Image 1 (spheres, rainbow, N blue to C red):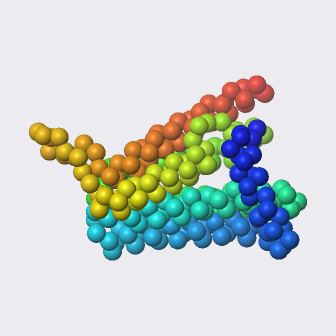
Image 2 (cartoon, rainbow, N blue to C red):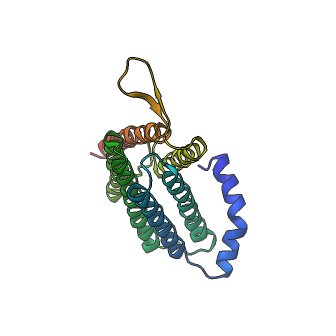
Image 3 (cartoon, rainbow, N blue to C red):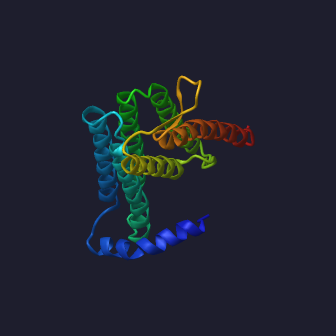
Length: 230
C-alpha cells in the first residue's frame, strides 16, 4: 500500500517518466545510471579518506548527497517499468542484482572513509550494517523462492538509503560550516563525548542494528508462513 509520501513523489516525477518513455529510455538503463552514481559516491568517499585532512568530513557529505541522488533513480526505474509497460522478469532480476551491488559499493566507500579517519568501531558498525542489508534481501529472495511473500521489517532498502544518505549529507554540511570535525570533551574523561562525525555514525549504528533485526524478523515470518503448509 502506497503512503502519502510515495504518492506525492510519484506525482512529482510523472512528467519525467512520460518524457523518458517518449525518449525510449529503458528501466534497465536507469538502473545502471543509479549504480554508476553509487560508484561515484564510493569513489568520492575513498578519495576523501586518502587525500583530505582527517578532520575534513565534506567528502562524506558529498558522498551522502550522491547516495540520495542514486536513490532517486531507484524510484524512477520502477515507475518507468510500470508506466511504460516495460516490466519483465529479467528486468526485475537485473534491478535486484544491481541494487545489491549498489549497496556493497556504498558500504565499501563508507567503511574505507571511516577506517582512513581512524574510526574503527564506526567502520565495524558499517560492516554489520552491510551484513544486515544483504541478509534482508537474501531472506526475501529465498522466501519468495518457496512461494512466501516476505516484505516485513522496518529497515528495508529505502529506509537504509535515506538514513545513511541524509546523515552523511548533514554531517558533511555541519563539518563545512564548523570548520572540521569538532569534538566535545567533558572534564575528567579521556575521550570526546560527541563529535561532528557522530551525526553520521549514530544513524549508521541504527541501520546496523535494525537491518539485522529486520532480517531475523523476516526469517521468523517465513517460518510461521511455512508452518501453515506443513
